[in-house]
Length: 623
Image 1 (cartoon, helix red, strand yellow):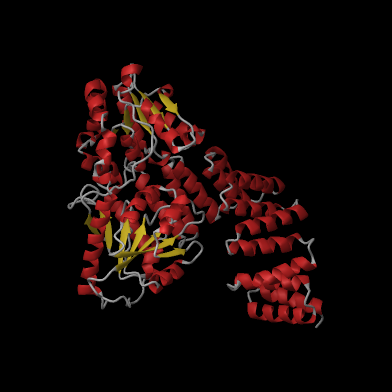
Image 2 (spheres, rainbow, N blue to C red):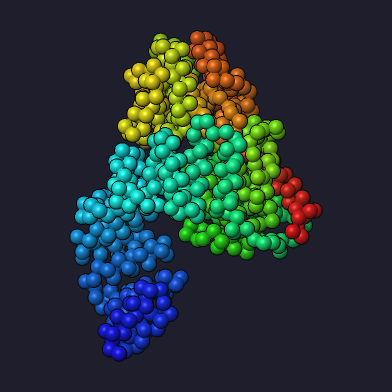
């Protein structure tokens, strides 16, 4: 057999998945011709496919050395480096491939992927635009470009590109999923839910899509607690149950009095609301009582990530690892209590708990049940999860005296007087994600504005409301309830947290959405002296703001019905003296409350950790 014939046979085996035979032939060729570029190239690719990407780099580099003019070789090395998270080197390889072959659409798309990984979204968008200009029928590039534009808040263009991808490939799971996320972000929840369900029809075991569906249902008006619980249980049946071990045994010494090893699993150990809520607690933990291990599903670390890392007895970057591999790490580290954070949101990993890697497993900062029988406990408080709640949990709720925790914020001082005294009319505000502005929320806010015909409403979230794809929906619903769109002010992005918070000085009252309340937005409004009016429902996610207001003694802002919500707003705006008293000293009240007392919260959680550990030692260590 000649070298060319051997090469042809090797490639055929490789494409057919007969990797051992392909590798044997590639190596035979290299024994005869060590510098053979194609054999080195394909052997390097094969190494990556079999989990040996690092070893494959030498072959890919040898291929480039033999044929530096081959764009495909540079691109293959870039892909291997990306798989090893060596992103800057990968970008250089793909840039060289594009330089050598500028009319190849796939090359521009691959550069876009790396730039996305690096967080350089505007540059990534330009790469994808070049890709679809070269190949208008490139469905994957339309899909990826739509995702970047969504992240940039350019929703109409984003939706257009998702639509093009779906027109080309209706069965493309990624395009259906991305369309669903964009519809969630713009508040078009019925369409979002339909697209998520379509995604799961195409790929039933796509966990990310199923978690996102659960989140969209939490935003949607009219979902009962029973329906939401059933949907979370369906997640367990479709995604988690197949990973449950037949039996679980642990090497953890069942000593009820020893120092505990706590593992925090999260994709939010960064500048993120969960990260900001957690960091003060972590820094206040008593290290004589707990060892802290972190399993960080973080792609781009920031200064908040470093704060967590400095507090770690064990730090594991788990992005890119399979759920089972993460579970193996947790088990190998001897974690006593695994705490999974906001499991169904963002880049979190709810299925890790399904492998039962720790004796005790706790859900924390998830505003609904995990749906997993493998999750033992859920941290809440008496407002979030009243003892006779109709909301269903697979976990046993453990109630802190109060739940929310946030560090004090360096911010401008709040306005001492209600702006309505100078303006002659009240001004309401919401800085919440547009997904939270459910149809029922907008209808109720229209009722507030109808009761107060001179009042105005301002909306802001990043730059998202400036997109017609977002604000047109708001205007349409408001106008359907008799409110002129000219009474609604759309605010754009401002640089810096201090500048963002400074905007609150122009507002009298903040309106809380439902059924998915504000959380960080509620805290920030109160910190800036702006009272928040809320309407809790029967689910945790609808009781978040009430949970924040209750320990502050601000229960007068918690409505018991939609009409009461309107009445509270009207009464406060009609009585500026009462509103002034309510606004004065809010920041000082918060700073002195449990909301800003991490030492208190750390001691409470440590007592909980100790109690559930003793229960395991007493009852469950031989399970």
